[in-house]
Image 1 (cartoon, one colour):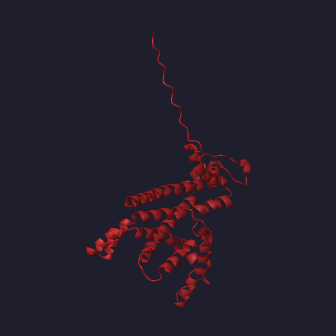
Image 2 (tube, rainbow, N blue to C red; image 1 turned 90 degrees about the vertical axis):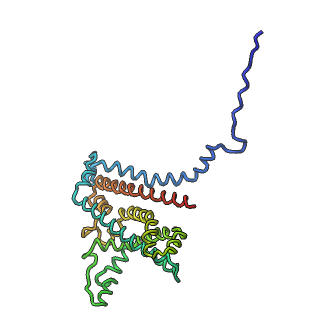
Image 3 (tube, rainbow, N blue to C red; image 1 turned 45 degrees about the horizontal axis):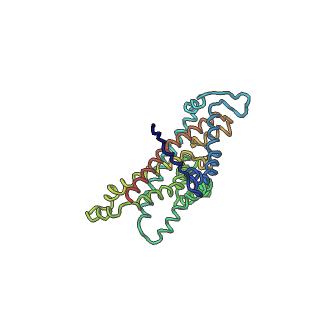
Length: 313
C-alpha cells in the first residue's frame, strides 16, 4: 500500500476585526474632509490656467471672433520681441528689485530695533505691522492723495513749511513714487521674517562672543548676518513673488503711464483695451511661469529652514 499524504489546510485569510475599518477606508476617511477644498482649488485656479494656456496658442481678438485661428508659439514670440512688452518686463524687474532690496534693508533695521527690549515695544511693533494690513488699493490711494498730491499733499506741505520746492511727485519721479508706496507696504512683511530669524539665534553663542570681547558690530557681521542669510533669501523670494504680480499700485498711482507699466498692467491693457485675448494670455502664462520658478526656490529655502529647526530641537 502506498501512503497518501494530504496537504495541510490553507490558513484562512486574515481580515479586519469586526467593527474596525480597513486601512484603506481609514485613509479615505481622513482625506475626505480635504476633498471639497481640493476640488474648489482646482476649479478656481487650475481650470482657468488651463483655459488661459489654451487661449495663448490662438490669434484671438475679441472684436473679430470669426478671425480666430491657431497661432502656435507666435504670441509668445511677440511677447518676447515686442518693444513695448519688453519694456514692461524691464520695468517689472526694476520695480521688483528696488522694492525688495529697500524693504529688506529697512526691515532689517526695524527688526534689529524690535529685537531689543524697551518700554512700549509691543505698541511700536503693532504700529510697524499696520501698513502691511492695509488693503493694497487703499494704500495706493493714501499715497496718491494724502502724500503725493502737489496741492494738498503732506510731503509738499512739509516742504512748504521749510520753504522748499513744490514738486509733482508722480509726474516727476513716477517709478520711484510707485516703489516708495510698495516699500512702505512690504517693509513690515520683511521685518517680521527677519525678526523671527533674530529671535531664533543661539543665545549661548552670542553670550560667548561677548565674553570673548566681540563688539556689537562684530557679532552682527560674523554671527547674526550669516544666521539671517536663509531668512533674507526667504524674504527676497516671497517679496519677489508678490511684487512681480503687483497691479494695484501701478493702476492706482499712474495708470501705467510715464513708463511705469509693468507686465501685469500690460496684460490688463492688452486684454481689456486692445482685446487681444491670445497675446494677453501668453503674457500671463509667462508671469505665472516666472512666479513658479521663484516659488520653487522659496519652497527650498523654507524646507531648509525647517530642517535646521528640527536638527536644533
